[in-house]
Length: 335
Length: 236
Image (tube, rainbow over all chains, first blue to last red):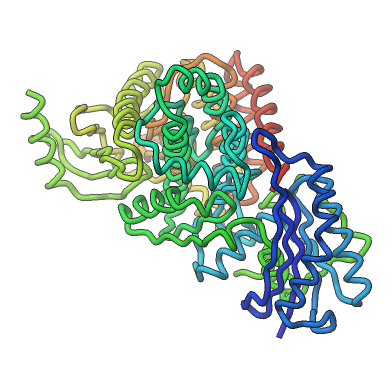
């Protein structure tokens, strides 16, 4: 049996999870929530993580019913992410690894999402749509790498949603994306927005500029309601995502889709992807907010795979990096 | 009139052989006026809003035909357009008989034991030249991949003919930005589909740069877009 504890804190979530051979023993998490109209700043986010990380660690061990001695490896997020929060979490991971005398393992955050999705859904070799506040990528595995076939050429889809939420002051609690999703259910009028797909790549910055420009005018003149804007934005953004996923599937000859990342728990996105899959006889795999949104167990799971294939990170190599592409990691645990 | 045409098209569809379902269309093989024909049907995508679907489908059908004609006028090999029906969004295209995709060609040339390096370099150079020519006509392909390039073998000619297909995402633009992004899209598709071909793609870009007088600004934009792509991986 191999038990791995995973530390995640690359953005505004701090999570610590414990995995024992594919079983999630515990996965507590806290979210740093800012007032409406505001994003989360790196230094404030790091301060939040510092304040709660030991409480979360205690919870993770207690819920799993384990002592430090039972753990075989300490995994932490090496990147990509915001510098200050990453440093905070890596520091704690390094400290406990030395206290407990356990090996350390630096994990790529994106790989964590993919491996967690594969574990929970049992998808074998899917085309992966990874959508979150910082990343938008269409990924498929070949020859020991998760290769990026399509991605955003500017901002991430979650960033576009978050910043739209700030423009019309939608609450960040529990997350801006969740609140947009609920409001969109009440929207009916379709407002035409720019639609920018470039092959398997997408661009969202133009849509954001456009909606920032027109939102207040349309709302104050009564042309449409805030709910209609949420609805139209979701329909447009998600259509683009489904389209590039389908293009990558056609290109790779794939019959499976796995959606991961924070935006991936949006049910409308899952529904649209499901319709596309049905039209081409493919299968959709998706998970809920526990595993889609950043969490500790996903880092533990990727760490578990890496550790079992013989990888460890030496103390002097246990740095973090804000830029760490999915395809930089050699996948030593798959054929 | 439109009604009559659509009925005729649906007859074609029911007799045609489905080849594959791409990202936005079903592709069939059939005969049109006795000629081997590829029928491309942009069927409604039920996952997207009907207003958006109609807009995209119509625009892409129109753009595909326009760009093909523009390329053909410039002497770039693309399939001949036989017939278009805007009601059912169907395009009847010449079938490139006896062709294989550049993607399959590179994959087989990369097999161990096949020492086709020089030949692949030659192919990369030709792709670069043709793309330069296309961009000089201000045609942006919009979905450049090695699956969207065909090699047609000509028995009378030693060298096979390179045919560009699938102009559904194409449009007209003279902006170096748009051309740079077009190359960026190809670069990503190329390198992710064919591992360890960085130097081959470098040759392609070099030949592109040498073939077009306006390439300097495009390559500069390409470098910019690459950096833009890096920024996006800042936050997880």
